[in-house]
Each structure stands twice: as structure tokens, then as C-alpha cells.
Length: 70
Image (cartoon, rainbow, N blue to C red; front, side):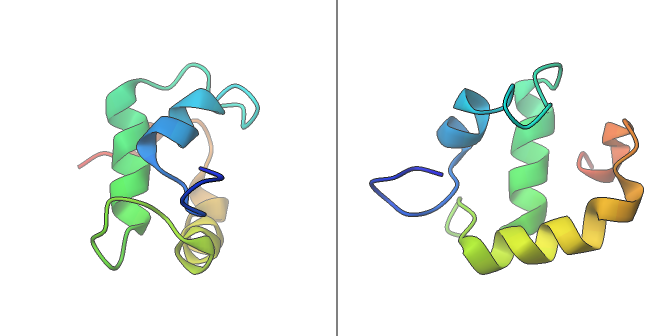
């Protein structure tokens, strides 16, 4: 999370991708995941958007990035 803004931004997601096990993901993959969960269109994920995204996608996260891109 971006500590100044209190949300997950593309930059904070990219910076912490290794901690999340996403170090092999491309910028497009990370952006796709962010875009998929950004319900209010502000370009970032707040806590609720992140929780909803993880709940919806958890069963499908199996190494396939097609869930996020497209």
C-alpha cells in the first residue's frame, strides 16, 4: 500500500510484487489486476476493492494471468 495515499497504487504494487509472489508478472499483468479491482475508477485499490478482488479471484489464481488481462 502507498502509505501516503492509503491505497494500493500501480507503483506500490510493483514495488512490493516480490513480497506478494508476483515477481514474475509483467507491468501489464500488474496493471490488469489493478484495473480489474478498481471499481471507482480512481486508478488505485482501496481496502474494500482489494478485499473484493481477492475474494473473487482467489479460486482462479493458479498461475494463469488470463484472469487479469483482457
